[in-house]
Length: 282
Ligand SMILES: Nc1nc2c(ncn2[C@@H]2O[C@H](COP(=O)(O)OP(=O)(O)OP(=O)(O)O)[C@@H](O)[C@H]2O)c(=O)[nH]1
Image (cartoon, rainbow, N blue to C red):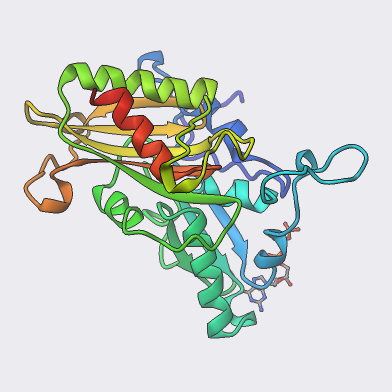
């Protein structure tokens, strides 16, 4: 890329087969590295007419070489991967489906990714570029409203991927360290979480480990202040809310405790919550 001056934006259009989870960590670089390129956000364009069918097509890796599908776990399609990593989802071709079908599409997409902002369009006409498709700052800000929205409890319409929220009381610095270790364990080594009493389901007995695609959180500190948590696949960081000009306001009851939102596969909320509390609060 030999060009004098700077680019305003680089728009990378991946093919229909791309998994953004492989690309995002490469571009989401540390400020300390002084890179002039940063990842602004991932936009996924969904075709309202075809998305339900796409969500039922397994990715090539889900299908074994003999053509049979993996024995356990619901199918994960490329569409699931593209929706689960998205910061913005544009549902296009809305004119080609009925209102009821559109509602079903929206509900299914929100059940996979409750953090993403959804725009419904015809001929992909969005109201503006700034703030809708560009200048999203999806990786350097954590919007408390979107965390609150994601934690409101959405239906689990999609068997393959879901959004779930964990809560934590205000943390001491030592507990934040423990949370860091917990996240490294779950995101890097994907340890089994096995609490058979939790919801009567053991993740281990299901033969599957949690696979987390996206992590966002807002953590309230005992000594005051708020830490924000950002993650994509195994890469994550804590950011001081004050450093990014985000609200530190924890006065509303909804924001008095910390919240961590995970989007991923094989997530058993009660088991994860217990495991988090055992790791951080004891
Ligand atoms: N009715 C209707 N047609 C649309 C809309 N958006 C795009 N089209 C038409 O759909 C046809 C295919 O366009 P797209 O689906 O955008 O094709 P594409 O994204 O370039 O194709 P792929 O990259 O292969 O997915 C074209 O004739 C478009 O004019 C829409 O909102 N409503």
